[in-house]
Length: 279
Picture 1 (cartoon, rainbow, N blue to C red):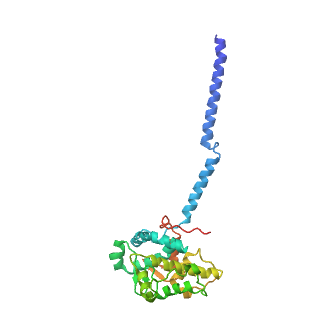
Picture 2: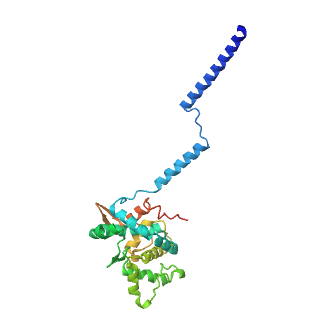
Picture 3: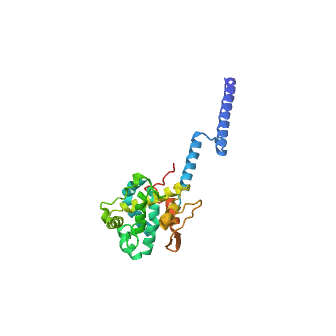
């Protein structure tokens, strides 16, 4: 009986020894990374992380974010979201580009008119609307608004957009166009025409530059600069420069075009006004 048990015991011991060896080897392999192979899930995870990193790098931080002026502006401009979307659909100019042009105009006003900002713009969360030398929330000059209207019907103009746009800014009473123009641009309760005039202006200079062979559709800083300096300085060329009025914001200075670009490519309000994708 003992003779039978001894070989059996040896076999059992050998089996346990083999199992122990396998377990030990497995533990060592896991600890040293011998079992790590890049399977499908690992590849997908890496690709996901990589894509997330790319998304994070796409947008920069807007330098004025979290300032009282910016917080007031955000809350004010979001009220115009529906109007901006409607103007964008009508003209093809992205809502984000319109807001990018509005940003330096309003930041300049908020920082230069401190009593008004503290007493009106900040507590009421409204955009500043001008009514003297420049009009409305974009600060549109009288001569600029007239030029925009004239380009709509002047077929010989490099700014001409075509028949479908000719009546975009028609007046209800042509004999009282001066008063109607002023009234609709400075309207503090409805900023429709402020956005519409601006969008048509942008479309007109984009058309001018495209006809000349120098498209600027994807250059928000150039478009904002040309909005700021006016039609007469819109001269299509190979390497246009960003610039325009100098804005004193706190202890820093920005050009009009620079600030528009900083907002346009930032993550500010990206969930409300997306960056338009180029075709």
